[in-house]
Length: 414
Image (cartoon, rainbow, N blue to C red; front, side, top):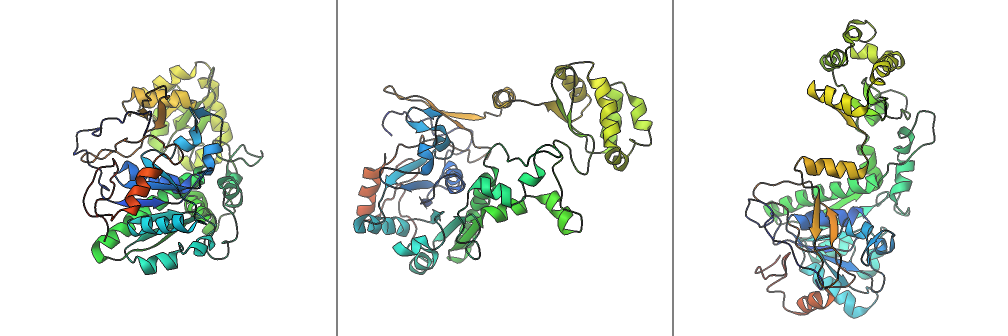
């Protein structure tokens, strides 16, 4: 891409070739869930071609500030390692190129409103009939049946899906999570499902339709809270930072800032009590067992905080960590990234700019493969930056398709 130098391909001690190398992904999705899924596939070595509307592109290109150079940081967060090509699906020639791209792809990802792509014969029925080896991934807000007409945005799904009802202060206003968590969960579910479908295709030669939707992803992610309700308990309510079934598993006040403490069993509680000089609490019948601690949470927290308020959070963090108690301060994002860096987790990846272009920082992939480490080979693209290259490939015979780095890798999907 003009203005950038690409990082070294091998980021670890493995082969340097991603496990999904050779796969081609046609990404017709936008905003977050679909692009996140395609970025994970690209991180693992797949060639991802992002198809965008001419002149406009992905909605998130305009979701700023903040920006890095001309790109919104929202866009850069989920679009590294991809090529961008602009195609106008209402133009017959561009639509023909779109179908050629699908023909040469292993995976097709889209998040149009159900039924919209049938106008262009890019719907599941049309494409799977024409390309039976294709893995077609459809991302929607509320599924393709009764909720097909409903537009799906993360914030709305957090509201109607119950997450906001259990998030926030007790007796306070229902609160959304600080990031588009439902989109992230759905993107991860899409990634898992796509790879499972590819494994099935490897065994049988048959592609299939993969459907994920935001509401189902959220409801499945309610885990213990959802399980309690469907097994007879009343619908749970917001409890702030407290846990409905464990205590103390929450933030506790210290002399300056709160400390997050996660005591998961009675042994840990007895250790905590001794560590802060309150061993008698572990002998108190109200607190000796978790059931009692949950029932007497208010009294327990009062006792703990009366001691913790004597020293700052840094002191108690060291004391409790030395005792083996899961705990830590409530960090902001800067402190969280600094912590991950201090622990050697390499939480960011950089694309250094040249010719006056700024360096683009992205959050690193959490995936760690010893033989196939994730590579960061292409910065988030400018709109249509690869249109000429991709068009030339689509207009050719496809005998030598692009790989993730633009090098010929031989025949593609048959």
